[in-house]
Length: 445
Ligand SMILES: [Zn+2]
Image (cartoon, rainbow, N blue to C red):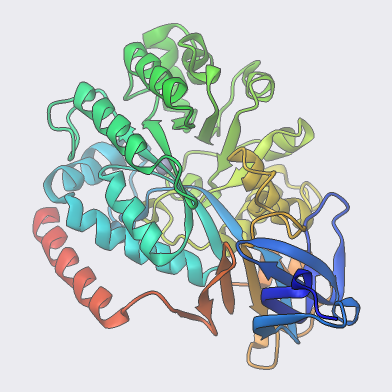
């Protein structure tokens, strides 16, 4: 007799499942069955119930099935500024290259087109969730909603006028509140508030952001301790190093996701641990801007909530998390001059379950386990992809040799099939990107 229990929406068959569960089980010739937006069953294909049926099946023979990757820090509209200001350190890169272009060019259209471009790139690169801080964040939410990706989105707040808050910080905070009210409760979009950084946010701004997050029960996204210059500047200005400074203003009363944390000072990692804060390690951005190498070995040893972020494509210059994983491993090895300083499995965990922990969403995301949201990626390792032959260590393979997804599923919905995004008109997007880059070129001259 057929039971509705074994009727699935989507079943992925015959692949190697890298679960990233607590035991790090890797199951060969396995299947993942999805019902509604959740994972219903993970088992060897031959152990599927006899009477199973599915509306759709995907054959994953010669393929690896992994949890969707999590990009824990980015600025998606920055895809329109790839390579801008190359050769400048962070402070000059922001003040001489990025902020002037943002003041002149960033409007809702810029944000939409840039977001669209980055989101497409992320979906093709196997990312199913991203955390973002920018302006006009409601436009990014609309794009993420339309394109089918999951996101934690923070409207950026700073002490000085911004593209969408020309009157200053009060206006920025009220925009953030309006954005949160509009998107709270959405099944794929989590709104947040994003005080930009200690060097752009005075104590009152940090406290007001904390109050808003507390009142609306939303997370805070912030850049923290990115450069040595920031540490010196904040110590001089406020008498405390960056993480202690925001702690003193009560920021950790709410859930915080800190991007970078390249130069934590005495007691600051312990503080992040005590406060359950997340960290987004962004090695490619840190290398491009010569900010330094974050102490990820110490962070891992403290079991901190450590994920990976690409940062915006202006400093990166792509939002591909596979590339970020390979770079994270290589940077740590080079920095410590130790090949065994971090394992490929630890790095792959940072791109999946670690990112989920950084976002405080590990109960729902980050591994392939029954009951979790069906955010799943299929990586083709068949004959069409030379870089996948042969495979010995599956984690090393995913971290160092993989660049793209074949199929990407978000919340049970197939968004990328055979390396094509199903939710976008490519020709139209190319035209829009050209129009925006023509504007930016005029301003940058
Ligand atoms: Zn950033």
